[in-house]
Length: 602
Image (tube, rainbow, N blue to C red; front, side, top):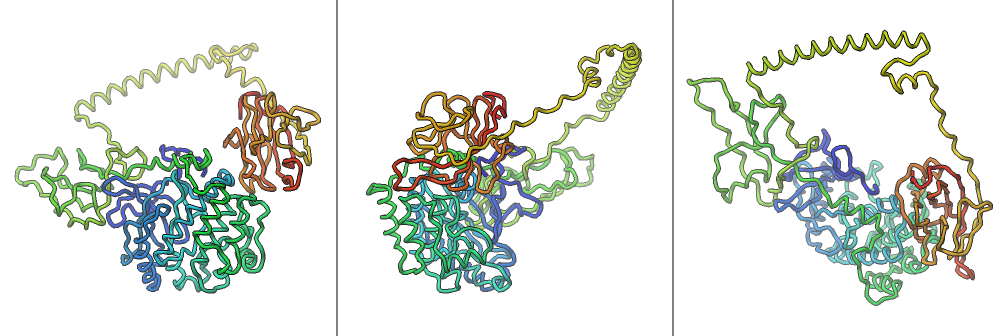
């Protein structure tokens, strides 16, 4: 989701409103939004009493019904609560015995590695080195707690501003024992399994090292090391064939190759992995700057940091409640909160039944009915429902607007006056319309234009102009664009010209990136598998001035939008070999000249 756009309620799409089949609370945590769903269950956003956001994963009911799953899940949660690493999301609460098991972890405001690569392409080498070193530290503390992750993959790695976070460690072990595995349910992701895992052999900490190598290859190239396709085909290649590392940058080749050794004993240890990252970085210490991620990925972090506020507990209604309205907390006389009773808005909402509206009919013989006693206070661990001061209209939990109340006599008089004004106004309007219509008929009979019709009359008597036809594409095959050279899409024939400055429209900068012209030009890196076309280049708005070459692999496509109104589609066909005397990219280039308005973008 690259750069999640606000939806109609103003919330980023990453924070999905709760639907009818979603709970509103989990053991006292009042839910604010749904973060996602997967094979193990659904994940929701909630808050602690201090206002810190947490992610609550609710396990699927099918797993909760399996006794062996519950036993293993409880064991893994206890172990996971001991994991306190800088690059893990700590487990802060859980319920392994309830009707539906769940656990809560610290909320990490950042996209998963999978989402980032799909939206923005492969990461630069420096970012991959910092990513793998951070993940290695996470595995160090996970393995130290006696846990093997078993499902380390890009979607289980979150990219935060200060480094990666590894999540969901240990859950796959609990799921692996459930009876569902005997009915076709596969635990783990085929593209990132280790050979011993795919073959059903013993799983050890070295299994996670193999997955780490696959994650490194994916982050650097944008594609799995053993390809994609059916699960059986991918697993066969993992067990019997070598990975495709042709697109892996040279600085990462040794690290990835050693991690992907078929023999678990031949894979490097975690200290060796960190040493390999340091060596590839040409420094003895890996320093993590604040901008360790590319700018588009960092923008996704900003979006996820703006989490919606938790649902507010609505106050008692000022007037008689409408049908279907059920308040969640009673109004009681003000009193200092005691240790046994949490303040309003925390913990599970007690049942409340309204007794009398604010303006009841006189009933002197009936004394006011007392409010029901609130439910017992929850335990401190589960008292996690932070109440904000405002919930935007339309979001789950927002109170429905109520029309202002008027006295019966005054309201009737106002309604009567409005009816009279409407009747008089409607009669006058009808008269004017009929009069204009008759005049228009007379003028049209004489070949004129009806009075007051303006452009409307002209539009009815003229045919709609046809849309401008798309320009014909011009193709240039096998263009070798050398570092330090540029292309101008209006040239015919189009040939690389030396220089990186001036009136160029696309250059291969010696800093190893493609660069758009400085005035009105933009580049768009299309997603892997996205079909490049004029329509795709016109519609895509993920603009960038530069695209780093290490994000590109054979088959990747880049749209070029020029300020002069030309559109180009670059298809990468290859790169210069290491022993070449020059550094170049081989491209197929398709050009649509004058395809958009000059200097107007799209």
